[in-house]
Length: 371
Image (cartoon, rainbow, N blue to C red; front, side, top):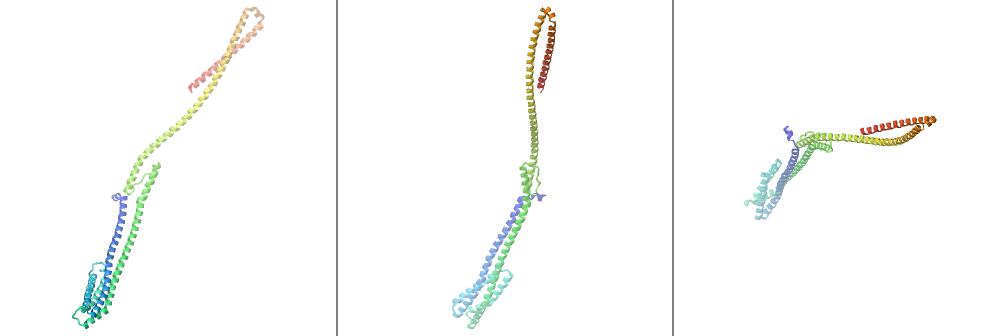
């Protein structure tokens, strides 16, 4: 569990960087080491090549010394001999890894063996007490064996050159191996980062995009990487808080929707009731107009009744005054009384009509008040 908690993006990135730095230092170090050894090998090759030249130079100087007897050539020969011995000693006792190779040491030993015989002949030539016969014999050895010394020095030079080339090839192989290792580390790092970092991060981004669109439904799982684990925990905490807020907002929205629906329904009902009231008012107006018309008719009927009553009173006066005439005109009076009876019934009908109109008007007014 502790190891899991220590795993983080920083550790992965640092591991990748350290791997690449290690490969970089390995390649650079190998290049520096090969360059340094190459320079030393170049000096050794140059030294072995000089040994070839010195072998031929000693043969020429020995010949000139014997033929001319000039001491200057003897001095030149001694200097050339000293240079050859110094170079040979360097090849034998050098600390270069190239000189410690068995095949190189073997060829240098052969060169030393060839040089010992050659050096003895030169020593005989340079000795002032040597007779002419011994000098000629020594010169003959030098002239006939200088090629052997040259060939052996050439073999040493060729071997050193081949060793230097082999080192260059090893450097190339090392660089190719380092390149392959770098590619391998890159692929391992790529798959590791993709599986441990990129893919979990893409999942986190996808969930956050859904949250940005208002879908707070998916929670994030805790990952192995420390940074992603912290990020997912923070998002889950935000999700829990935001989720409760969104639920409250949804409830409020639902309440507003219901209130809006009820308001619309109430508005429709009020509109309908307003239309009903308007219609009732129109009906009441019509009833009122009808009542007014009936009242006008009643008023006219009452006036007619009053006129009739006056006429009746006049008729009664006439009857009283003319009692005598009444007897004469009994038939006519009977007819008048009959007409009065009919007028009385008409008055009763008119009064009954007025009473019905009054009741209907009161009922309509009561209904309007209730509504």
